[in-house]
Length: 376
Ligand code: UD1
Ligand code: UDP
Image (cartoon, rainbow, N blue to C red; front, side, top):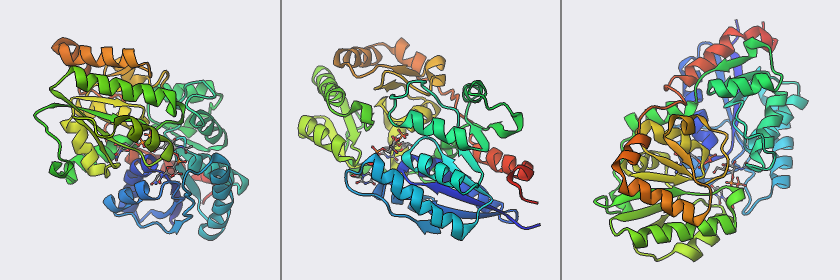
């Protein structure tokens, strides 16, 4: 029997991290699968460092990124660019991940070409059209055109069933591949953080913020909050790897550059970033992936958003939603710094998002359900 041709498509840093273990699993099973990789390069630099780390050499590269790009150009460039790649690579299935513009445009393009789509990290929802924007609608549309759904948690399975996707054999509960990537990286790529010039005798708060909903005032509020936190706590340092998006950089550098014990750094490669999570005391973030990773390493996460599509860790008690109100952020961090009891109750190392075997489950599901793909 001929091999199953699987085309994996991704474009941003988080997608690359979460797709890398799937590509590794496909390569490990190369007697059954032909793995074809296409990057859109929606992120150029932040993507390439992940490709290097996991030794992924894309077969196709759309190279779409523009400085300060907009959703219209990005979507149309990818929608059209993928048409040609489908014609050349003739995949049996296209795998996309999560909720980015790369995912939306690739899924739609595959649907137009009548190629089955497998959606990894399917079923996440806030049920608020504009929050996160445009990600909520990106994942709803991707789920609408998909054939296979690889859901990370039971809650995401339930969301899909409630959305009317009822054929059991198409929804698979797999766990999140980010845990596969994290465990692999922590085990195989230990990194020395000395080049960051941080003082780890201080309590380290790791901060990341890049979401569109937080551009402008909310991000300014976050900056004022962290400034207040270091002023009130001489034993605390803040480290912020600042996303390359100019909308983020302008606000952050104008508000926080040069402040003592606040270190603004370039986005870190994934391996040192994973080590930095391990060295940190508290994580402040609006990232999706970091909410999923940090509980595995026993770190409390305060989420700088009003809503999350990842409520599982909130239920487990390791993640708390604090939004972007300066006072709420300052007060919640202070409680965690002052009370060992509160800190310990959040720093549990239980992770609802996976056990490191999600990628294996995904490729097994594809193999076991090959007939649905119309392949003999
Ligand atoms: C995108 C995703 C978001 C995801 C985030 C992860 C969409 C609509 N948004 O948002 O869901 O959480 O990635 O980081 O898909 N840039 C560079 N080099 C890079 C990466 C980005 O210069 O390597 C700059 C460019 O100016 C680019 C801008 O960042 O135009 C914005 O990138 P874009 O992918 O449009 O938005 P993100 O905020 O990164
Ligand atoms: N990350 C990284 N370097 C950084 C910041 C984040 O490698 O400087 C990793 C992080 O561990 C996680 C992923 O990037 O796996 C999350 O990406 P991001 O926050 O950009 O996107 P989101 O998860 O919100 O879509």
